[in-house]
Length: 504
Image (cartoon, rainbow, N blue to C red; front, side):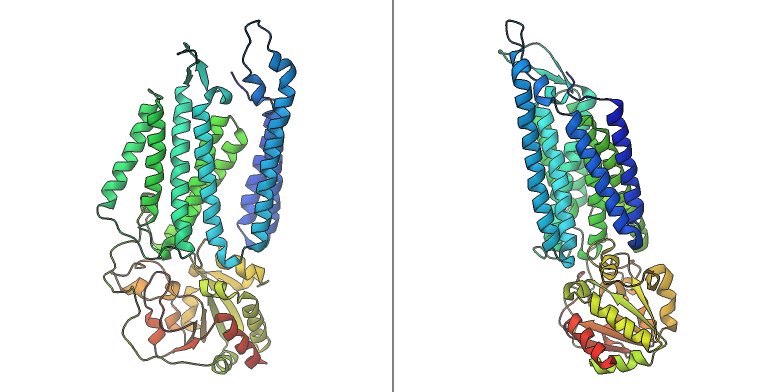
């Protein structure tokens, strides 16, 4: 009993929406075209939503029971009312979501964007779980079941085996995405510590739970007993939690990227259940692009892509004692006037921004400082690490917001060799991405991650709130104590403002 009306116009509309999504991904790959990509995504989603509302209008009408006299009175007189009511409910839900989205977008600070992305991923995962549950409880409304012998006066609906596979995968991936994103949100928001939480025998536990989920999905194709479906759901919520808690804060950007991929695959799986090609296309695009981005970031961080999927990568036991700052060591403190004088005399300054810059909202005054340095004939460049900030592209977005020219922004592999010929490395709010421990200390949780060679610059100006804290990964930084380093201890925005005044 199929409820979906498939027609060539709907297929064409979904094709156009899919093309818009592809163009959106292409546009979002660069800061200079990101606004155009965002607009294409909005257009594509509008087309997909409107088409779905039109083609799925008779959902409640086809489920109307046949009375004993053979005349489907509710289909003759009640279908229009039922469809209108359903449409009002759907539009109302869309309106509520739109209001929440607009208010959130207007109020959210850029520093909280990683948490917001993690929260959105959790909602996508939860939506997949709810759709799968609705399909399991009422399969005839989704057109994925045959009616068999009535049992105790109630019809029993046998779900198609292929639909059970789609349903099982959808609920499993959705539940993993939800619980994993919740843990990522708590870590990013500071409700949980950034250090890895190691469970004894975690790899054996994870493999056992994953094997159990896959085995139950296979058994679900033969037996659709409710306990199987709900057990798959419960175990998937658990494994999502177990996969994310062992991952440290320094690797959280890759986690966000991977959860983005999971949310896409969950949506694609539910697209098959709903017979909605737009969901399949969109989910596959999000899933594949998120996986590709995660692979690129893992390569940039010298991590194993397989270990990302397994969970707990970069979470080896820390034998370096990096959970707190080391014993007191001599270091040099400088002032805004000192920093301004050194940079005015430089031929080239490389700025390395980090999450601390985002917290202080210092990107605009930083660009002002760079403009004044260029007026003095100083060549200014920005060095962006693949995992700077708390999510992929975080620093690029902040600099684009401050209208920093795109040709002044460079990735790690393009600029790292220049530090040895650079007069001043200006580090603002970054720590882990400039920490030499990643190259030398095998016991460090960030060991193996490529970092900027800022210590090779003639002078290092390091803005930091205080000497008492450590980076998000919980590792002290030897750069603080080098002879060519001058520590500028203050709020990042206030310090840069003082430097700008000194440059005048």
